[in-house]
Length: 292
Length: 163
Image 1 (spheres, rainbow over the protein chains, first blue to last red):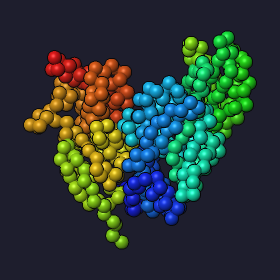
Image 2 (cartoon, rainbow over the protein chains, first blue to last red):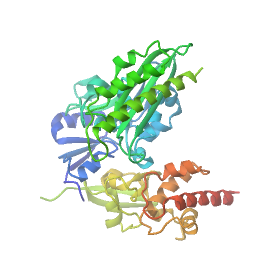
Image 3 (cartoon, chains in turn yellow, green):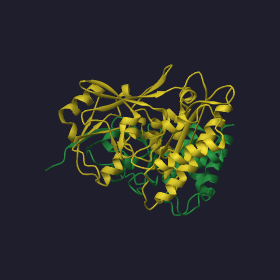
Image 4 (cartoon, helix red, strand yellow):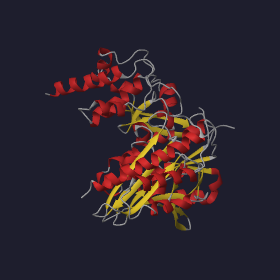
């Protein structure tokens, strides 16, 4: 046994989990898929006094499409999100990103909310949340509050979730009624690893191929994934000509604060940021143009 | 200070097994150390190598990343559970032998579980689908090509048997 000893409680409902958190939130870790938490506990980077298991709470497992947003329960397995064709039609970036998340065995167990709450700066789902301006619903015994992705990701492995709160569901905006395309790519040492640098974009075009809505972001280039709404706004009205794309991608890369480590230097990460941002912007535009 | 124990009941390879376990006991340690199902191997113990793959409710997962207490009420299939009722090798297992899909054998239980997970949902997999299915399992001997061949061989044999 590698983890330090802990107490285990299987929560039967969200209310029960929230009540446990209210009593003793600082000593509790919620466990969803555990694909990051269990290794951290094995290495004793995390030593919760009590583990509250939310895997058996059926109310946290759902995909509910709506006109403006798709709601996904925090404990929905990544594999189910990946396989959901109706969801892929509404929020295609999620399926594209999930192809880069871990491996089949980890996606069978890993959850959407778990990945967001863990908030690895190079993880794919947090980047998608930033690019799409997803909203996280945080429940506690006093109610629910909604937090934007921008405010949610506070730093490496750090989010806006308070010790007494449970991430309950995530609202992923749908760009409805538009010719929309998206793209996700990353560079990592091995497929399935966290990214050295990841990029995602979503673009909507009018009938002339001019950009009417744009969003893009980068992950792995600093403390948390970032979206660049100001730079994306400059692409509106363009047909994503080479100059416009290059300049947006370059300026985004300049805004990053990447670190150097065994896997890549800061310079290399910034170089990748510029190249990959341009690549996803072009690919998302082409994807949008291919739609009728 | 004595560590609290938690009662669990898990259906392992079709048979209900009960135990009292400390919360921090991983599923793979329980399978190997207490049930003596040593077919499942432990490699990295932090979710990288895939050697410990088992089926949890018919989906391949890493048994080093689940605590045994979390499996309470669920079904687990290990590599021992892939064999036929008389103990002879399954078509997939036999194909690994026929096509030299293993050398040292360390990764093999995890490869078999990953491949079986694929064949359960995709009886006629493409090379790309096979590579994706075993993408989370490390092998240092074969260079993977014979493993891909073995899974393909098994799929062909199973298709021929079904006719």
